[in-house]
Length: 181
Image 1 (cartoon, helix red, strand yellow):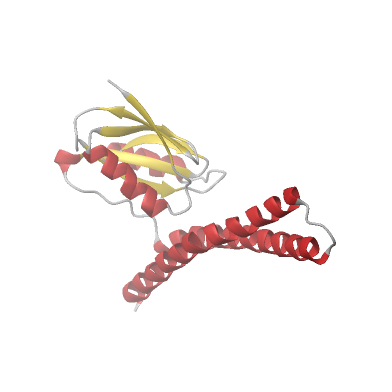
Image 2: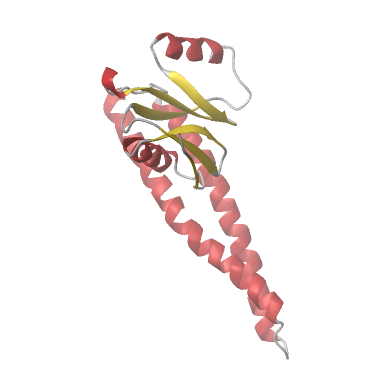
């Protein structure tokens, strides 16, 4: 059995879940993960279906009951990193869904979006302030130019994922409105 490591930043959990299931269809099954490193072991292609969930960060009174319920339903907890958890179930048993309520999913996405926007804003302020001060002086400090340009690059790299998360949140809100009307 081989081992494979993939490095993906967990910004959009739905994209990560899709990638993990694509790896499973190729015979690489998730063994453990952190917020950036995913470890896969080689096994039978397509033998498991994976789903993610985001549990409360510091545990709740009903968390153990929820995990016991999933286990009794034939759903195995693969690994947990913080509040982000991956579960799997044999594919021959058919597809499965985790029924975290949409309000919780929306709340978790809103928290991620707020954090990413804060990071984006701080990098934008530091980058622009630094670039303005560099070009306002008599000489150009290449190290400062590089660091402040990196801040602007980070801003550009965050824009796409933030918009994707906002789109996912918007779709969840629409689904919530459909079921609550």
